[in-house]
Length: 383
Image 1: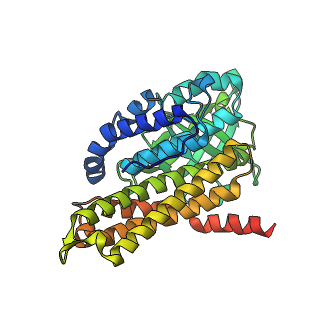
Image 2 (image 1 turned 45 degrees about the horizontal axis):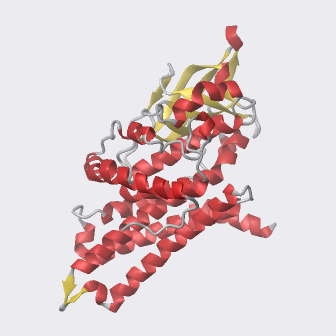
Image 3 (image 1 turned 135 degrees about the vertical axis):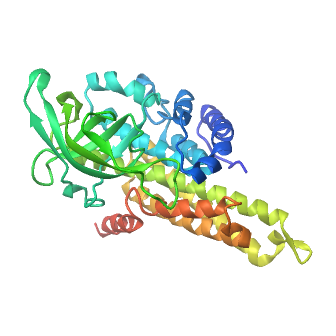
């Protein structure tokens, strides 16, 4: 069922209606086939880009949608309710645009940002490494300065991991080491077809199988010096500045996934009968559905509270961690309970809830594990 949303403007309400229309037409009919076959939905992100859904959180000056974050996240939630992998990739694309928008020079933004926000080129985020996940300061992939005409270049050598859209993206927000120590990380806007950049086979994942997640190998690949975003050594600042917003993106995706599971469970409970009554009318199951609905509503409320603080320019780091923790734990519980509501049918691939349950698990892991979120929250409480 459609979520009854409190939106800030009539324009936002129209945007949500447009998103639902596109998602029902372009996502819902294709999701089962592509997830089951583990095939990439060619052309789908271009469709979302033409509809203006891939640059919503960025200014109209560069071709973005100029929408507040609370509206962008609710669009993301609507996408996730139809196809979680597409919503997650959209969130990652938004995250990958952040370094250029927030730290790029006017010339860099004018050159590259409009095509990125229009979805003409899709972005990936390349921060993690095989031995450096939550500890971003431990990166070992190197970018060494090479002198030459036109400002020289950087030679990149090393391995990156867990890249959403790996091998498919047109650009990557790449973080690599330019000097020793924690302040030696720099950020680059790397073209997807850079010579010397290769990708591993897609990871064999539990869920989100239609959009590849891969490793990347940089074998002395050269990036023009104008691909450096911000200053040398500013990479961790750039990466961390986007983490809270990225966590809100995952919270919205998790909420949409949980809403889809709840809707499926409620529809089944209203159709299935036992002992002469609809199973929704049995108190034990009705109370379970009530708890599921409360969890979804609570998840939505936490991410919207954090987003509204962000839109007002107020600190929202703790609220972002609370939202990510709350929404993703809710998604895991609600999808598991949805399988329980459907009983044996829920354990089969004839119904989507088994896929929802598999997809929910990763939400508790990426963009900072939920253990990391608890660490962030507890440290802020200790100050």
